[in-house]
Length: 219
Image (cartoon, rainbow, N blue to C red; front, top):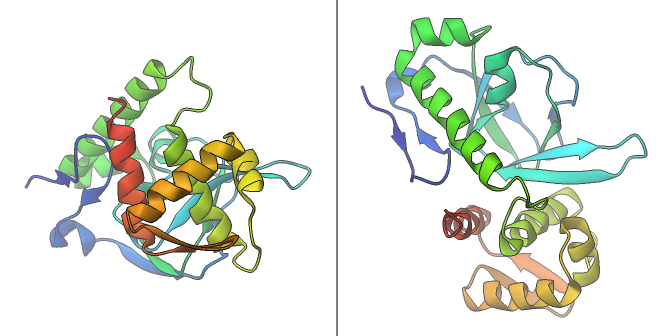
């Protein structure tokens, strides 16, 4: 059996039915906290459906968005494999569904699902390479990718608020004019719709895939 990574630059995996059937389904609602920073990682978790934000919650309540995950991503797998506590919190940005694999550590995954274990280790190796290459880049992502993920997070987390370009930029470390240019580019690509200050996201999954494609340009 050979697992399939969606492309060479992201960690989405198409799991075959023989592996999917081993997972325990857990549905979640938008706004649910799937795990908190500091929780012990106990299970291997796969996003079968939905959007999840990885967020650092400061003691003063400020939220810093680290990353947004769509379907076919494993969530918190690094902490699980090394037996560490989660370094950030996972918040559901939409309704969705997790598959929880009832293994308690890397050794069990290696014993029961060796092909999956190999892919997880490759994913960690890829993440490490990217981190090393970007050591001097404190932002870690292309600005358009940061803007896209910030848009998804803010619009899903706080849908009733009309976010300004300045606020979006402050959240992701981009200049207001850079946000404006990026939004115009995304609108021309048909990924968002603008109506005055209001921004409508046409297709979140397409936005995430576009973001991943932009990251691939850095490789």
